[in-house]
Structure formats: C-alpha cells, structure tokens
Length: 116
Image (cartoon, rainbow, N blue to C red; front, side, top):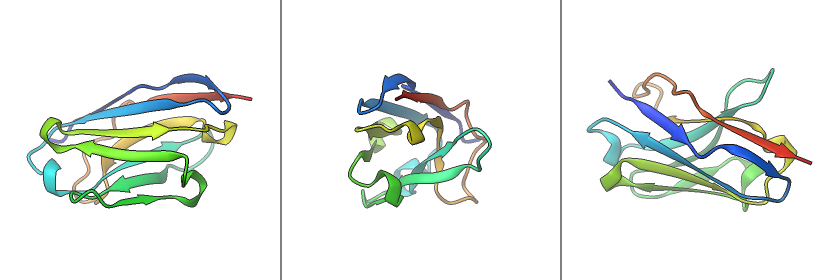
C-alpha cells in the first residue's frame, strides 16, 4: 500500500517562495516517476510537474521557470520548490506516482495560499 504525506504549504505573498515535501512509501519508488498535482477550489486536479527515476523532469507551461521538482531516492522524498508565486498558484498540492496504475490513495495535500 503506497502512502504519501505532503508538507510545507502555507500562506505567502505574491512573488514569494515555498518548498513542498512529500514522503512516499513503497519499494517501487526509486525507478518510477513521481509528480506533483494541484487542485484549486472548483477546478479539477491538474498535473504541475513530474520527475522520472532518472531525474528527467516535466513542467506544465504555467509554472516553467518558477517551480523546480526534485527527488531523493534514498529517502523516498519528492520536493517542489516554488518561486515567484502568483495568486493563481493557490491550491491544494498533492504528490503521487505519475503512472495512474501505481498511484496510492491521495494524501491530505499541502494547502498553498498566495496573497496579492
């Protein structure tokens, strides 16, 4: 059973930074892509960034150049450094495996609030 625990959310002014962390369980972590997703009120959950086991990354256009995803396989941790935050980045952020067939239950997420 995959378990995921997100942390690091909070309230920040526009232009500020936050770093989210995700602790994952499971023996398949090292070789599989992980991802950060977000869900704003009234909107569907969307993929924000992903990182493969080899470290290659993907970012949705709206966060390119501002967010950085990284991972530490030995600790089964995934991070999302968010810089130059905008009000439209406000959402609950979740981590999970990118492959839907590998995903565990969604964690409680990390609330990110950006004030203008």
